[in-house]
Length: 508
Image 1: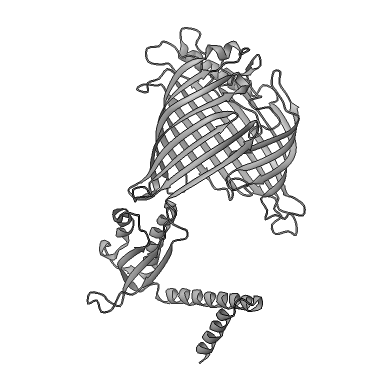
Image 2: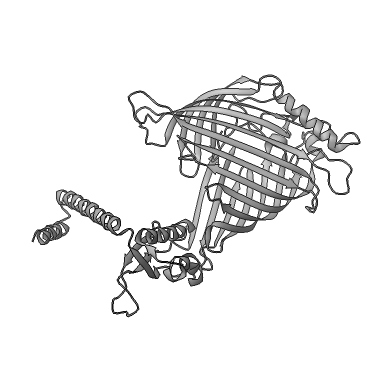
């Protein structure tokens, strides 16, 4: 009787939910019943967790455009007839949960994917009381997304169009196309086809191409790029990400200004880069745009024009960055929202000898590092650090940079908002290898030049700046508005005293 009365009361609440008080009472009652149901389910699983069961069938509902063969690769290993022995209930739930987690990570279904477990129809003579039937409710996301908009950053404004086609052939394939027109990146077009390997969300293959035209105002030229690439991406068992790829890129340094420096003029014209690249990322931060705890390590290694890799540039290039974020404890406050972040970056471009040549050639402006600006070393103009030829920033072959920030919740806004007040200090050095191609023993000369340049990195204080500002962490980008003051400025480098605005996903 008590259960019947409770049900009648709940029905009366549903009938009269337009009344705010009754609506609140309904919400409270539903929350209580849901909590009790969850508790009963946990108790039942706990009492029966070691009992043997079999999974007789798995049905995926509402996956209308997804191939049967694609789903079978995911769920066939879970079915009991493909196992050596029976499951316990706990093991069965774990295996089903692991397979459903794979569905969630493909990004083609509406999250979260729901799972229901029931006993099969007992009229089926082949079923037993320990058989389980699994029903997975997996409604598909829209098969396409079209997004248009504008972006504004430091010395950059653009309009863009993004198109994403999902689950093209029923196996979680996607096609991502991008087009943009802007003030600095005058045009950029790209299209990449991505597909999982063997129905695994942890291994994916990508192939595509791009074309762009970018104004390099800090070096008096425009760079045109056209090319294609392939990548194999995988996620290791302990959560780190890897990408191994090949790219063939045609580059052209063109559109030189009247007062372009001799260094820029010497690199004008066409070049072709053929290279293999490996990227490694281990990221444990709680929020990449505004981390309060965790660690990041990222490295990119590239080998171009060596051995069978054709092309007219040859080098080995390696860069790495790390970031540590820590919450700052305040006595008497459980979570103050105050955090400390510190980061280090560095890179080396090592010239190699091409096939048919007797010594390595100096690096080109297309491939060198640039340093300085609102998203790396704040308090300096874009590409304001490092070697210059006249008014042109011509880049360098070795660099090191670092910074530290203390972030506070904005008074009156609270720690749960994505807005923070920050104080920071950062600095770095960017140097070029000297006399790389001189002398008869080019390889030995490069080694000595690298050694000398590394020693020069520690010669004196690096260029550095400090400042204060506001940080806003949007889900897709980080916005910073800072007031910076250069503290150490080396001869020829360009500091930026005053307000800087930066937009990006990768801040030091």
